[in-house]
Length: 317
Image (cartoon, rainbow, N blue to C red; front, side):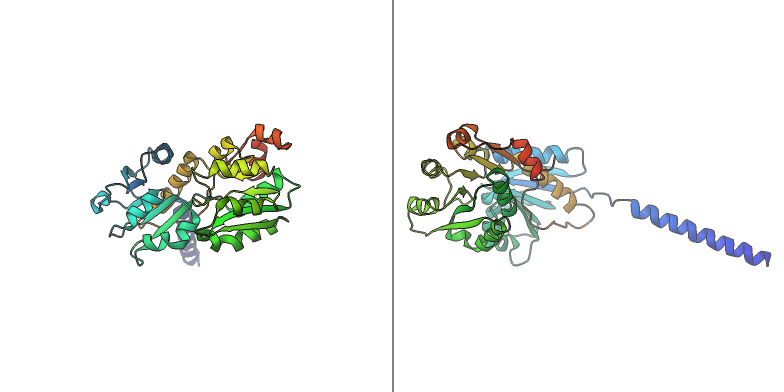
């Protein structure tokens, strides 16, 4: 009987020790495997360089080897030995898409409409690559919530879109309706006159929501769009700090440094373990708000402070 009890105790001790060992193993995070990451920039302009600098800063001290390349002159040899390619801007993504190879690609600072309409398919190269994206655009839900917080009396949001963006209209309208906002939509035909479409939208809108559509808002049209909106006394919610400075009442935007931070975090997750596992495509996580106080005074608006709006929108710190 004593021998049986001793054997049972030994078995019990073995089970306990095995359980403790398994628990300890479960608590251990798989180590990041050293990998080469190549960041391909569309050009050498400051915003792209800032993204690269932020990625480098956040990966510094880690196991990964980071290098930089440019869209112009990019060849297959530029990505030799690369485990993950990070493209910054559309031009960089398009350059990588033309190259043969199976290097996974994380495309950042690209419009969601570009990615959905054909960019993703070109990068996939018939399934030879795995791809993901961090969009340039803010999510519609965040934009609609900012309108509700900053302009509580607004009832209708005007939006100009080119035909390239039409596939996103349903999602935009749903986000606005969820916050009791109507949509006044103006679709710009390929040969249409921008100002005519804009004035039709402004005549029925309480706020103009600017989207990252290069056929609508670009360096040649932005000033005219803002001046016309000001003449109609319709505030503009923009998507960049430069639009705020140029005359938008306020803007919701992510800085290159914030995009770089999110990119670095995505790279770390993707390279955690053996195989590269890209996260799903995502909108910017980190963001800020800028207000043009002079425009606010001219149009008669009193807005909550920028940091208060950011906090109420749930901006991470």
